[in-house]
Image (cartoon, rainbow, N blue to C red; front, side):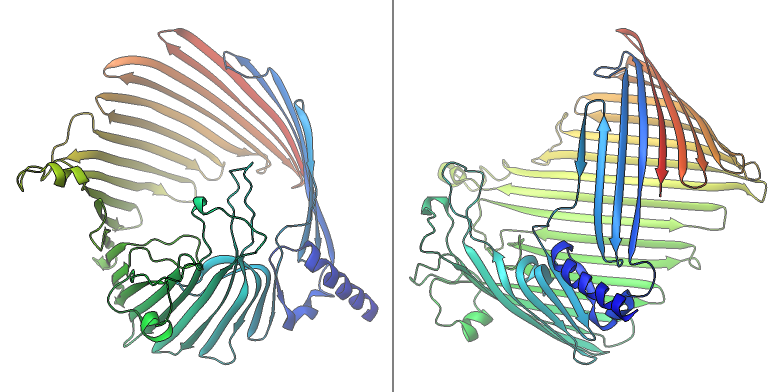
Length: 576
């Protein structure tokens, strides 16, 4: 037995670095991998199907067949080696395990977890935020209440400029190191993080300046706190600074990019040259008491704020959010809502400014076990004010161009769902459902909505379902209606749907039939009708063999004539 365990240990030691992608290994309990269950497991399946088509369907082959198979080998519950193949009347293909181009290991022992290889870590939205790097990272929790995270590695690899292939974006090699320290207590949490990143210019690497790609250097730092003064109440605050050199080769002093005070400039980088300074602040409050929840959030990010520890950074914005949830009527009714406001052009230097307002209201009402109702409404507004240079050049009085370039977009939607259970016992269960939804979008210029600049979508459906529980047979009937107005045109589509499904022979056989009919009109003129007939059946043998069949017959009537088509599929699946 000892020799067998040693052999398994050697095998996993060799295979993990070679065949694993993002494997999590708990070194403290690695012995549990051996001697529990089968060290080698194989599973997979084979499926075959054929499709028959006839009628007026464009681009369909009269007969097609498919054969697919897959086999997966699992080693010690940690390593998967998948193989697959597919054969069709149009060709063949296969796949097998290949050496991955990105490898990562995450061994852990007690309170320490290492991240080795191609990994990603997150310290803060304003410092290191999910950027993948090639190197090593550590998450250390030496004792309860303390947590330390560190990283070092390559954020970007060097890519040379190729004048013959403009689709490949050249980059400098980018290295980084960073850390995060957290103190976690019951009533409060304190944390601080930073990341230092820089581009290394290879003397042999040529990147023309006309590309606008320059070697950068960045130091981003953030401090934050979470306070819990009483049960259910939580306050959060975070302040961040980023000192960014857009071009390391330029040593001329440039003005600051942020506000009047920056922690990095005043304390850490007071003598840095060609450095832009930016700051960000985030505040939040959540209060939950007696099932009621009240929340508030505020975020402000300077124009141009960047951190090289994130792939993308939203900046030049101010966000304000408020959310509320309140149960009523002995928890039978729950009301919730949230409002958000966002604006940009914080320094008033852009050619245009944008304001956004988002609001949503939700209501859930359940007076008893039979009734259930849900309603939600959302509104999204975007206001844009464009300030072209000709407005100032050609203006002869302060009122001439006041509203000529004010533009507003409004999008709102509402939905109502009602459900009523008519009867529910051991023999029968039947209920009625009603769904209504409205979506409205419009473009308003100078407070005027011009015809053709708006659209509305109305959708409704009513359904009835009957389930005969002992016989495992269900019946359904529904009616759907859709009315849309887009610009100056309107479209109407409506029609019923009927269906039946059953499970027979001790639930080994499933069968179903559905019929639907709908007709459509455009601007009051009839466009056509469509009749769909669907049938499906399936049989399962010993939980490994599955035979299935389905067929669809469709008939269309329009001004061009009558068209019909039939599509039938027969399939077999085996799994092991």
